[in-house]
Length: 215
View 1 (tube, rainbow, N blue to C red):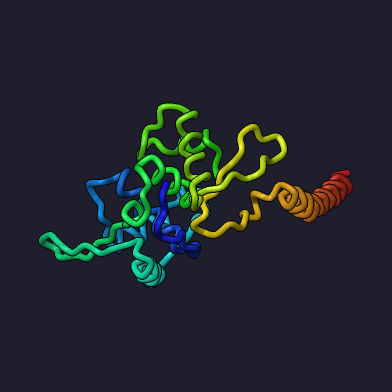
View 2 (view 1 turned 30 degrees about the vertical axis):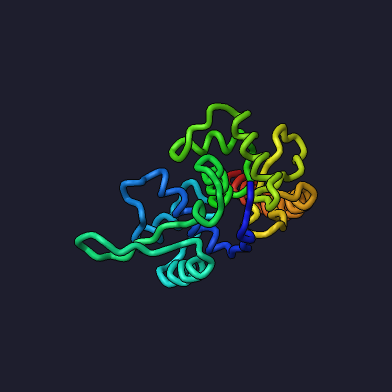
């Protein structure tokens, strides 16, 4: 894959807006390019998004302006309503094929995933023939002169390795750090356990008091 333009490092908002435009171009082409209202609603979807966000119009407008300056988004004005609509230019700026756009899009919208998860989640955008085909595209994206994705270390008990996109930089998301995850899990469990024990003690005290009154 011959890349001429450097890969930008996008903010979380830029990743979400770009990913949404990629998704809707394939999943709902009849409504694409997107109006601002449609784009805001798609960014804030409760499903197929990680994390779930609540962007307002100004946030999306500012993000679109930043993406336009990077050449990744352009505007379209047409039709009877003359409403401004937005489309992505990722496959114009970078020589990626639809299957690769789908993988990058899913990683932008849902975070790191295994080949199996990508295969399951891609249905509305692209039909991969097999897990081997997904892996092949991941290898192409990871081993390019300028990689778009990278493989993450396997977590304990995990059969498949996960992949993350590199449009947000190369820093591994905290929740994907297996060591940190174990520490966070233990640290988070202790206060919850203490709370349960306190509630149980209170219930026992109330029960003992009730039994004394009854006797």
